[in-house]
Image 1 (cartoon, rainbow, N blue to C red):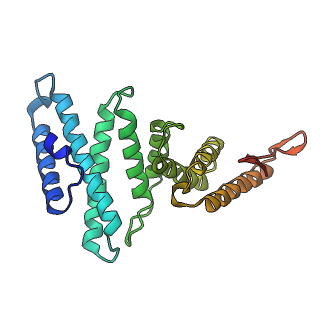
Image 2: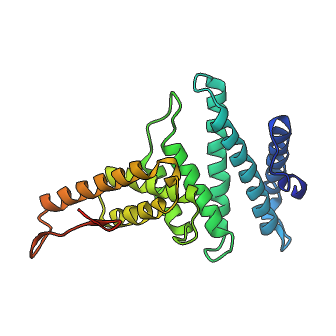
Image 3: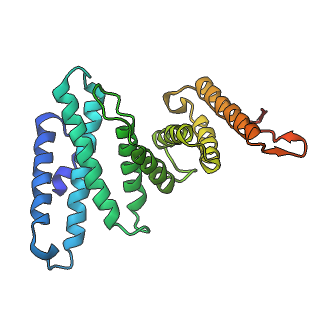
Length: 234
């Protein structure tokens, strides 16, 4: 399995075969009576889950870039891969101690997969599950470090927090949304949204927040508290 994991450019039949191999290896480990009697069994099981999850995530990413939404079989296969990747990665995260070096990366992967399922763009998707959105926000927030998060993670955080904020306004989420939105502005392409577009989105979020505060009577001594974005008074 280590040989498979060291080949990140797997594709096509070679990738399918690697997934089948990893899935069979994990199934065999799970069939061991009483969870195995060796001290190294939990680690081997975790490595098997990590490998299968990584391979499924890789195949899913390739499919998402190529898939034709009109191909029902391809869409169903991608959804099955995503559900399996969520299950396997979730089991791995549940086993890992919170302080384990691998915990943040596994949490980010599971958060991203959960958000992808929540925003499934293909025809015939199930209604979005708020539990997926909660998992995405909470795991991404716990796994990301503000000064170290890459552009992709920052984009996922901004979008997930924005969606949850629209479902149920929460001051804590609003603050986090603006924080990560400003972080996303630090990247030249702003996560693919574009600097101008992202700035407009953040201003709109601030405007909506101001209106909500006004309706709730959240006024300071001088009226509604001023809101700032990138040095601009709103």
